[in-house]
Length: 317
Image 1 (tube, rainbow, N blue to C red):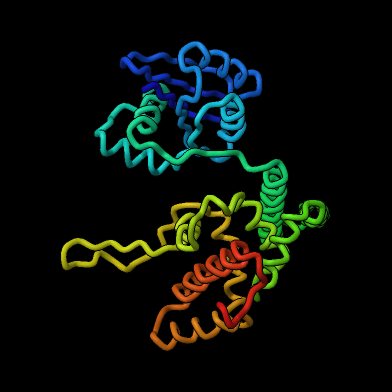
Image 2: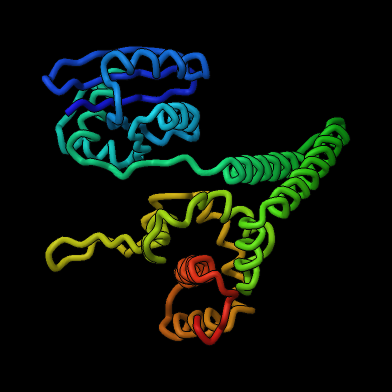
């Protein structure tokens, strides 16, 4: 069976086609619309039809080429880099170059049959772009405010001017997010369902929708919690425990980050989670452990209202 592996960088793509008879074909092209068109044309010579293609998730640089390949009819899988790294270790690979990485991805696709990827609809991609822009603006404002604390008087006016500019941009992007969601009935309904959960505000709901992309790919709340990195990771060997358990933190870090402050609010205003937090405190759990557990419960509540299509009900929760 033929398989394709692509090592994605910011500006380039290293491509390897692993043919059914064991031969290989390699190509480098630009990670740009022209490069993607060139790649699709080249693949048509060696890997026509619905051939499996694997790419690592590389901070968003893989998205455009993944869409181009999906639209061309290929069976695209976007793979967690940690899964590729673990597979490389299992194969005792030593060399690491762009072509060898592409070959490794092709072998992974061929032997592990990863889940297929489908691009989210345009309104979700646009929402994700907006919430990520908002996150970047807030981070830059925070950096400038931190500089202001130690800045010499001669530059303080400049920093304040920059902070004012960021605050204006933040307000504009927040308004764009609200307008964008209001213009799409499905997004609007999902936002309203999430806001029925005590602790989830309008901005958190928007971030969750933007980062979640497609709820249908998760069959259970636990699967969604694992995707968010909010499931326990226990290190144990034989009868010995090696350190305390911790969160796996494998998955959507932006989604996980967005739930921290909502969890603090939920501990004060979400009745089921108030009782849950009280039980954990009575059991002597540290504060950060309690917050992480509440974040996981919030993901379960979010999954529940979105999957059922019914507003939050404390009795059912």
